[in-house]
Image (cartoon, rainbow, N blue to C red; front, side):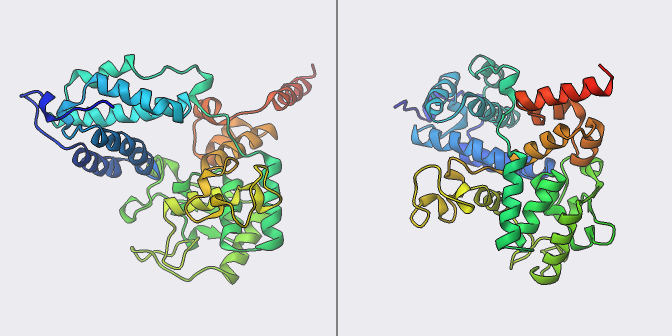
Length: 347
């Protein structure tokens, strides 16, 4: 174990506990970002702060490249290279904040370029996605056993619109128009639901007729009549008001567990499986977070011939981002696309 103390700190740096620095940094992140960004950053950097404390590094001044290298080696056996790279990049942002507070050696964040694993273009984004067949199977199950429930409406909206968690949470009751079969995404930063790109993310999405019917029935039959802390009426509610980001993520993990619709592919007994316990849903090897649902929907729209400019406007992502991070056809789907393009051109 690599032990250290405050003794290695430079005299010209201001002493600062790593955990105190994390709290102050997250306040800044929360003020300048939206959606689940702050939760993601907190998870990534909290692991590093916990490790520092376990190693006796109780002053941010004392953190050196040796510590970053040791932390990388500590984490590598437990996660994919892409996951570790993203984690270390976030830690670098945290340490740059420490530089601004005069609590971190200025050269340290830049020196991390030699420590952070490099990724190929293919590794920059995950190929994990929810396929169309699996998504429709989940919706079919919900339609049969939980028709118009909160979970049914939530999943139908996620799949149909391809929206982010922040977009789903931002929807108010009057953002849904049953007659026009639309939902309107509005950025309301002053009342806790800023969209990813602020007002630039605002848009109206035409819903599939079935999705609109599900949402309308949910409102009529099962929606809790609640307001959030700002007096707004969320479209999707819990008994306390608007869903927290963590709640949406947990529900999607649960809904994508394969044992919801059949036998467990991992040999577990459903009645005794730890992954079925509240708070453990994400540990199931087959469960997915909302991000692969979004990736799967974007890929599905492209597979079905939707022009990228149409998809861009619908899911609030520029074409370059869609091509790089979200559009993930398999080899057969890619062939079908090229075959369709050749037919369109009479080739």
